[in-house]
Structure formats: C-alpha cells, structure tokens
Length: 238
Image (cartoon, helix red, strand yellow):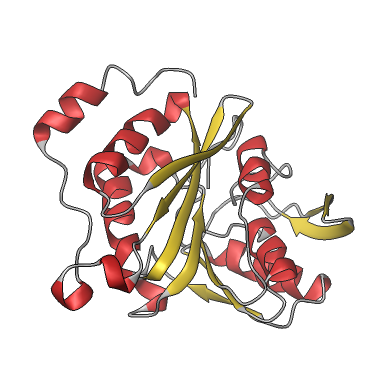
C-alpha cells in the first residue's frame, strides 16, 4: 500500500475514478511463476514495487498459518502467503473495490483455494478475528495518527505468539514507527530485512503464558514526547 510516482489519485479510496487500463504482470515466488492482472487506480499499478517485494521475501509464512493481508491491492502478498500457507487460511482486505476485484481474480488465476477477499477499511472486514500473521505495506500518506491506530489495533487481531510484519522506507518514517513499536508494543520488535531504502519490521504478540491477567496487554497510545523525539529520525535512510 505504498505510493508510486505518477499515481494521481489516492488508491485508498473506495471507488477509484481512474479509467481502467488493465495489464499483466508476473513474478517468481518459491520457484513458481505467479501471474497477475493489475490496473490503474490501485496501489503499484505498474507492477510489484520494491518494498512489497522485500515484504514478500521476509514473511516467514508457515503451512498452518492464518494470515491477514491488510490493504491487499491487487493481491501479491496474499497470493504469495497462500502459496506458503498450504494448510492455513488467508484473508485479503482492501477499501478499494477495484483492488478487491483484481485480488479475487488473481487468487483464482493462481489456483488459490484457501483464501478470500473482503472489502472494507482497516480491520473492519475481520471484526474480532485473530491471525498468526498480519502483513501490510501501509498507506503512509493517510497520516501518522491513522498509521499508529492501525499498529495499535493490529495487536488485538493477532493470536498469542502472532506476528505483525510491515514494510516502509526512511522517507515514510519507518524509523519513527520502529521506535514507536519498540516503546509501546507489548512484545519483541525485530528488523527482518533492509534493502533499496526499505525496512521490514516484525512485531510479535507475546504467547499467552507471558501476558498479564486476562491476556489483554496491548500497545499503549503514543505520548507526545515520543513523536517529538522521533521526528528528527523519520526522514533518515532505512
């Protein structure tokens, strides 16, 4: 859900106004060539962007995982996750209806049976469901408060021991979000990979045995001081 130059309207809207101009893209994943239809009005309409490619390479999906692809776009992360989670289940969500249609078509095109696409904003389509892995390339241009809200609420949608894996680059403030997670997340935060200016972060929810009474420990709202300290690092190289 990152931004690309030349995309004139936000891709995080429900009904894009851009004229449809579908095209075909392919990329190799675990030795299999995956095929996709992409279109105008969705994120990365020209093909797989380097940030999402780095995210896919570092998902670490297990065969039985329940996976949420949050902000799926045309579906590259969800399709790749489903190829790895052969005995699991993948849910792809996006507020953009054109993106959702593409993702459904791309699941079918790549022979994915254990996945589904739902339309809605952020976590609305998954209600109280929990996952072993939430993967996302957030739409950073929606603003820091919204991104922090997504990071906070992700905790409630992870099963004990589950992982939030996200990607971003220095100019999008990924160092700020890493520091925020390290300060507020209840479990460990790890840098899984760096490349092409991007950084892939993993924030893990503690196993049930390590949580407090009731297992309700979750990220705390950001304090003003945290943002003030991190603003100077938000534009640094990843």
